[in-house]
Every structure is written in structure tokens, then in C-alpha cells.
Amino acid sequence: MDLSTDNVTREVAAGAAIYSKLVLALYDIEVLMFEMPLVFKCPLKKMMNFYNEHISETHLDVGVGTGYFMDKCQFPTQDPTIHLMDLNSNSLAKTSARIRRYRPVAHKVNVLAPINLDLPLFHSISASNFLHCLPGTMLDKECVFKNLTRHLSDGGTFFGTTVVGQGANAGFLYKKINAIYNKSAIFSNLNDNMADLETILARNFRQYSLHLVGSIAFFKGVK
Ligand SMILES: C[S@@+](CC[C@H](N)C(=O)[O-])C[C@H]1O[C@@H](n2cnc3c(N)ncnc32)[C@H](O)[C@@H]1O
Image (tube, rainbow, N blue to C red; front, side, top):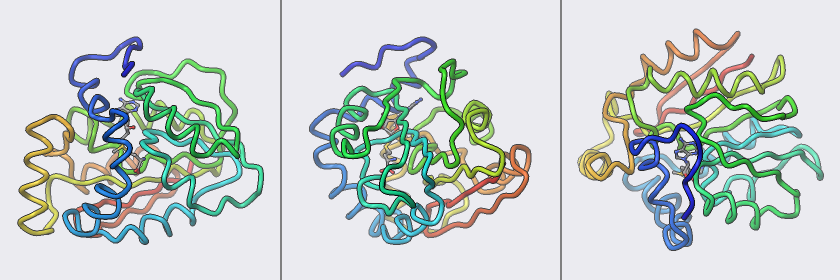
């Protein structure tokens, strides 16, 4: 797979490297349908509802994976404008093919670095199940919010979900699998917690909310 782009360290590449064509072929069943409810203790339906509540007609999706939510959600129009950002060309290709009916525009970028692209202003930006893949502490990940909110319209919403590594009481299986994923650099969330996520939201948005379901933080900020 092609992960080449400027400003990508080995640690950053590790958060995207796992998404081979084979892993993406299994992802919806293994991660979304099995691990989310049984390991991370959050029903997939809650994520889908959250996505449907905040999606808009001009949408940027970041860390797209297989594009499951964009394929299944109800956009408020038949013909939304959709842009995709991901570091991994497999994820971009899979998602672009899956939602080709919306003619998405794909950008291969590392969103931890400044994004120098000529883009429209988006009314919604989502980063679902994404921050836990990025290296560093939760506060280190604030740069992602700063890089992306430049491309959010006034009144637009940035929303997402992420597995936290601290403060979740989600049971033995979550602790075990989260530790294994961190050891193999698939996740990097051992320093991610709700208090730091709230600090980021308060610093970057006019209004915000966040809550925890199992080990999954649901967050949104309005610019
Ligand atoms: C766990 S998948 C999330 C898939 C999807 N959003 C979902 O909710 O199921 C994480 C995605 O983030 C991408 N990714 C990881 N690090 C990235 C980075 N620094 N910049 C952009 N994309 C990145 C990976 O390639 C992968 O497609």
C-alpha cells in the first residue's frame, strides 16, 4: 500500500499501515459489527445515529476506512458534496468505490500536518474511530482539530468517535484488546482521556458536547 506523503514519521505511518486490502475486506464485520459492541462496549447503531444526526450536504470525512457510515447514512440531500481524507491509498480507493454514487473527491493526506489544499468550506467534518489510531497524547492530537476546523464553515460541526485508553470502565476484554492494539501500534490511545478531549473542544469550538458509551467517546464541536 502507498503511505507516502510529506511529513509522515514511522509512528504516524503505523496508525494507517494495518489497513491492507484484506484487513479492509474484514473490517466492517470484525471491527464494526463484532468488536464495537462486544469489546469496546458500544452498539454500532449508536454510532450510526450519531452520524445521521450530524452529517450535512457538504461533508468531509477523515480517516475513512471502508466508508461504512457514508454508505449507510441518510444524507440530507440526494446529491451531497463529499470529500475524503486518509493517509492510506487502500482506504481511499475502497471508500471511493463504495460511495461512487456520490462522486467523492479523495485526498491522500496526513491530517496531523497542516493541510495545504484548495477545498470548499464544509458544513460537517467527521473523524469516526480515528483519533485512537494517531500517535501521541490526546492533547498532541489537538493539531488535527486545528488543521481541520480551518475547512469548516461558521456554524458547521466537527464530530466523531474514538476509543479512549484512560477512564473507561469497559471490562476485561476491552483492557486486553486495547493493550494488544497499543503494543502493535494499531492504536495509540493509552494517554487519551475525556478530560483532555474536553479541553480541546472547549479551546476550539463555540459550542461542544461529549459523552462516553462503553470505551467510546462521542464528541462534537460547533464552529
Ligand atoms: C479505524 S479506521 C476508521 C474507519 C472509519 N472512519 C470508521 O469509523 O469505521 C482509521 C483510518 O484512519 C486512517 N489514518 C490513520 N492515520 C492517519 C493520518 N495520520 N492521517 C489520515 N488518515 C489516517 C487509516 O488509514 C484508516 O483508514
